[in-house]
Image 1: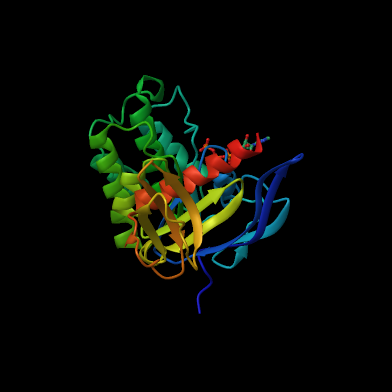
Image 2: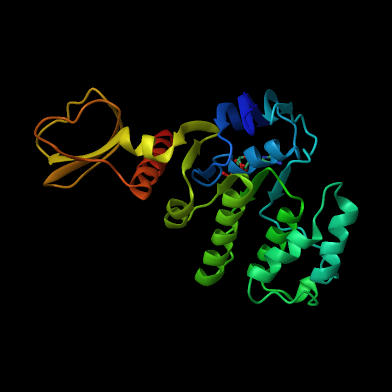
Length: 287
Ligand SMILES: Nc1ncnc2c1ncn2[C@@H]1O[C@H](COP(=O)(O)OP(=O)(O)OP(=O)(O)O)[C@@H](O)[C@H]1O
């Protein structure tokens, strides 16, 4: 059996007393597109940088196709960081030429093929003249020029207008369909995630809350609605609940549908929002 493209076991990263990541264990299946979600500060960027080898774990291990990463950039991994570090004085074409010098495995043809698909990026423009969205697209072309087997994208959609977002997601989907690349993509844009992701990894306060196939996760949760005066009795775990004078609405994980309550499976947005609300309420309760 092939080793999993990304496997984390007991992975932790602490900054002094702050546990940015703690005891994270999961695997990403080959050719999957996983949405990495969680509130601000949940540890998403920290996790991506550990997988890419830009930082060393405090404890535990992450491996890529069976090779432990341990703070060294893995040749099969491309990471698009939130900062999009590109040389300001270079033209786009020069950036792509630099890719050949910086990477053992590099395909200028692939990088330019991606650029061609992204309308509005002039290869002879200097990076400093580009909009934030165009820089993101150049950085994605650069990341794909490395012919990665694992593509890590940290908020790739945040600077993009809806059209550019659509173009970029299409490129990611084509990459997965044609090359079987495994993608881990962090974003706060839940609708876009729902369009492209088949797996979900939800972090909160550095810990994995939910991980797995999205359809299975949604099937394992229910949104139940009942009258405010009746107490919810369930054999599942109540993730989040909210009340109006008339009714109670709750997100429940596992268990059977409570009798006398309306019960439906959530969509991805409702599921993630439920976990985000629960996280915020836990933090407020601690203050
Ligand atoms: N180099 C560092 N030194 C100290 N603390 C850090 C460092 N990098 C991250 N942190 C802290 O670790 C926690 C997790 O940060 P991280 O950037 O991974 O979260 P995130 O989920 O990506 O957040 P966002 O959605 O806002 O981008 C935060 O509390 C952050 O302040």
